[in-house]
Structure formats: C-alpha cells, structure tokens
Image (tube, rainbow, N blue to C red; front, side, top):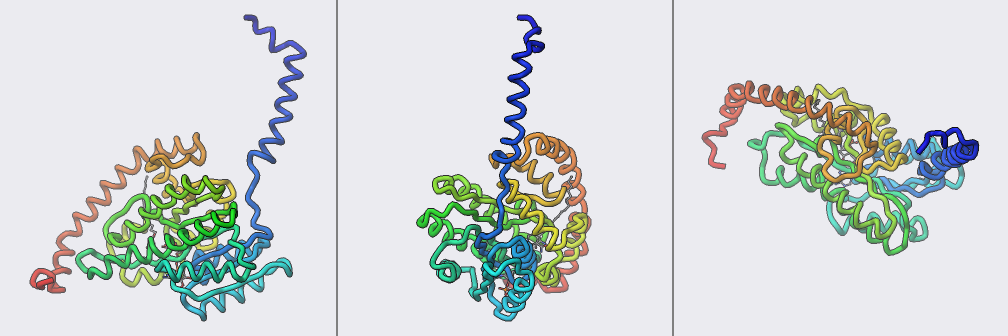
Length: 341
Ligand SMILES: NC(=O)C1=CN([C@@H]2O[C@H](COP(=O)(O)OP(=O)(O)OC[C@H]3O[C@@H](n4cnc5c(N)ncnc54)[C@H](OP(=O)(O)O)[C@@H]3O)[C@@H](O)[C@H]2O)C=CC1
Ligand SMILES: CCCCCCCCCCCCCCCC(=O)[C@@H](N)CO
C-alpha cells in the first residue's frame, strides 16, 4: 500500500468534506446544551444557600421556578428575590411550604408544584434540601445518628421517588438532580451521621440513571465542597474543632459559584458533577462504573489522586491520632467513661 493516496485529490476532497460536516455536527448536534429558558424547574431547599443561588441563576436565564422548603418566611423572601430577576412575563415563580423528609409530604409537595402548572410535571427537579450536624459519634444519641439519613438521604430520595414516578407516567423527558457532597466520596472524623447519607445518594443516583433511561429522564448528582451558606454557619455550631481543621484545606465556594458549577455540569451532561479540584480528584479516583466526564482529564486526575490521596489520608490519620489525649480529656470532662449510656 502506498501512502500516495493521501495526496490523491479525491481523497483530499473527501477528507475536507468530512471535516467540514463533522465540525458543525459536533458543535450543534453532539454538544447541544440544555437550555433552561421557558422550562419549569422545581428546586427543593430553594429558600436559601445553594438552592436559592440556583433558583436565581435559573430565573435570570428565563426559567419558571417552584421552590419548596419548610419555613414560610424564608420562602417569601426568596420569592421576592426571584421576582426581581424576572426576564419575561411568561415566567412563573411559586413557593410551597412542606417538610420533605417523608414520602407523603414529598409527594404532596410534588403534586402542589405540578398543580400550579396544570398538573404538568416539571422539566427538571433539583433536590438541594439537606442539613448536616457534624459531631463525634460518642456525643450522638441514636436520634442524632438516624437524623443523618433523614436530613441527608430521605430529604432528597423521597422527592426523586415522587418525581421519577410522575415524570415516567406523563412521559416527561426531564432531569432529576441530587446534591451529595465531597463527603459522598470520602469521609473523616465528625461526619459519621452525614457522610453515609451522602454516599447513599450516589447509589440512588447511579441506580436511577440506569433505570430512568427507560423513560428518557436524565439523572445527575452534584458533589459540592464546603459552601458558604446559612447551612454551613449552622453546622459549624456543632462541628468538632478537629473536623473544622481537617476541612480547612478546602477553600470552599460561595453558593453562587457552586450553583454555577452545578448548572454547567448539567449543561455538559455530566452524571457526577464536581465544581472544584479536590472533589474532582476524589470523583476520578472513586469512579466505580460511573460514566466518565472527560476520558482524558479524568485519567490525569485519577493519576494525581493515586499519589496525592494516600499522602493526604495518612496526614489526616496522624492528625487524628495526635488528638487522642485531648479528646480523652474532653470525654472525661463530659463524664463519658462513667455514664451508663
Ligand atoms: N454548605 C455546605 O458546606 C455543603 C452542603 N452540601 C449539601 O448541599 C445542599 C444545600 O446546602 P446549603 O445550601 O448549605 O443548605 P442550607 O441549610 O443553607 O439550605 C437548606 C435548604 O433546604 C431546606 N430544607 C432543609 N431541610 C429540609 C426539610 N427537611 N424539608 C424541606 N426543606 C428542607 C431549608 O429550608 P427550611 O430549613 O426552611 O426547611 C433550606 O431552604 C444540602 O443538601 C447540603 O447537605 C454539600 C456539601 C457542602
Ligand atoms: C490530593 C488530595 C488532596 C485532598 C485534600 C482534601 C481536603 C479535605 C476536603 C474536605 C472537604 C469537606 C467538604 C465538606 C462539605 C460538606 O458536605 C459539609 N460542609 C456539610 O456538612
């Protein structure tokens, strides 16, 4: 075989034609970005923090928004902010007060959200609601321990449950997005109630991603690092000092930065969405059978993590071990060793 074929004018013409055809198809067909304009988007936890930042971002992009959380006053304030960002008279902004930690209330919230749109299921559901109460296991009551799953897993899982059923029933080819955490990939002292819930969300997202292919529903899951939100201020009230110290390596994001990262990931079509380098390293190294976002970049990240994560882990273990004596004194002062519980 001679290489002369590549200088054959016909070959050159065909090659150029293929290239010209493939460039626009790559740009316009292969990479068509999800556009929130004119869509109805349901955001749980939309009254503050990540959920509110996301709602504002989407309102600016022309979407209709429904938000659900428990506290009416915060919902009212959030709705006012959304109203000020209105782009078109066709956009609707609604809020409904429901607790989302049970099947019934989450289904009722979802029904209310649909009812305001003639019973139509939303085009996208972002389950942002959640809370965390970091503490030592030795300080937890059984209720504290169990609350981790309620405030981390069920508060989103019941919304996904209601949404998936109704979207499948209506043939709505929409999106369901869950919000985990860096702590859905790894964990350390202080997060024994929260991290398991965030890991469980990953299992749910990967199961649903597969099952909801049956209905053309896309499932995404976001793994944010520290976000400076009202929830973060709240969790810091119970957070052990050593936990705070370990996570201080993480620079953190504002709610707005995190919302923008989440939205960009959804628009790229990433299943596991990360918005910072540290979590991207854990994403690449704990990938399991999750679809890659970018085969090349993820392989580079995986290689960096292969070396970097064990070094970080051993330094954290040393830090925890160095804390033993101080912790023993703390437990002693609380009467831990003499209490009957
Ligand atoms: N901030 C951080 O550092 C990180 C947070 N995350 C996760 O990101 C998500 C958003 O966090 P963030 O913005 O900080 O949280 P915030 O506490 O600032 O906001 C949480 C929102 O969820 C609502 N909510 C909480 N619990 C319930 C419930 N049981 N039923 C209905 N609504 C509820 C809250 O309203 P109300 O209380 O009125 O119901 C509020 O609107 C959470 O899932 C969190 O676990 C992940 C990584 C880091
Ligand atoms: C090469 C590898 C380097 C690794 C460095 C790792 C640094 C630690 C990152 C800890 C991040 C914890 C975020 C917690 C977010 C969260 O979910 C809570 N705020 C909610 O309670």
